[in-house]
Image (cartoon, rainbow, N blue to C red; front, side):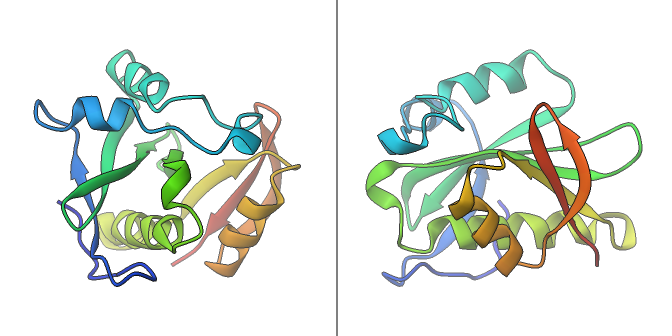
Length: 156
């Protein structure tokens, strides 16, 4: 479990936990708001399949107290950069600070690996809510584009 002690606006404790036999169905069923489907899949199940078929990504369940409310994944690329990817917060859980707590928790944990590392993520240029969130958490665009998404990074 990755736990930074952060809480959402409803004071629920946000933690990131491995996807396992007990929670994978709840994670797979996480669905975003309809207006976000241009940037994320309709269900987190797609991210779970990606992590099962790839050596580069690891899925995590996002919990608010003891309830699954989202999915996020992380990986390390060939250059040693740590990446956050595949974040999807359930439609009914959005605008409560869950995404912010998720990104902060995972970014801090990834940055602490190997004595401090750059953490990267990417987002579609039209996804202004994501851009605002990531910028407010210290991520700055690098100028690179990957798969039509802007790459941003946070340095320790």
